[in-house]
Image (cartoon, one colour):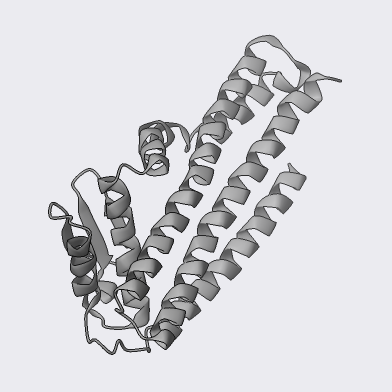
Amino acid sequence: MIGYYILLGAIALVSWLVSSTLKKKFEKYSKVQLRNGMSGAEIAEKMLADHGITDVEVISTPGQLTDHYNPKNKTVNLSESVYNQRNAAAAAVAAHECGHAVQHAQAYEWLKMRSALVPVVSVTSGMSQWVVIGGLMLGAAAGLGIGYYVAVAGLVMMGFATLFSFITLPVEYDASNRALAWLKNKNMVSQQEYAGSEEALKWAARTYLVAAIGALASLVYWALQVFGGSRD
């Protein structure tokens, strides 16, 4: 267990560093005002219109960095600051979330796969580790009966969460690429504004990368506890 806590600590540290850098980048590029004077909401609405998407609503949601696209009710949810502000960071986030709406409209395969996993992961992710630990307590490491099968079931649950994390990566990177391409091709931002939007989205994507690596490391660690011990 000590090794697991060390692993958790290392991942938590890297996650904190990435999140801290992300916040600093957004603060920095929140000061770069858009020459076109458009708000995040207006940027989002124009990107949707330019892609012929008329059934998605852009709405404001409370909080900071709470921006997301909801495929169920087809809404681009922008945090209050992004929705109202007129800077490079707001433009980047608004366009990124609209990138997900474009993915949805075009039936992007990775998004469809992620959406299919949501119901499973929402149920299993919170309990998977405890199921594995319960199996180990019942003798899984020694390859004993029900404990082994309980632990394996927990690993399968954890595997779904890990798969979800890695499927999320192409979804997020593609949404950012779509956003940046649109901002550039439609001449929505200046060169300086584009550079700020690009860097902000790169750091946002790295948070998902760290999460995926953390999920994989956790899965490997617990798999070794279950299968490693059973070979002794």
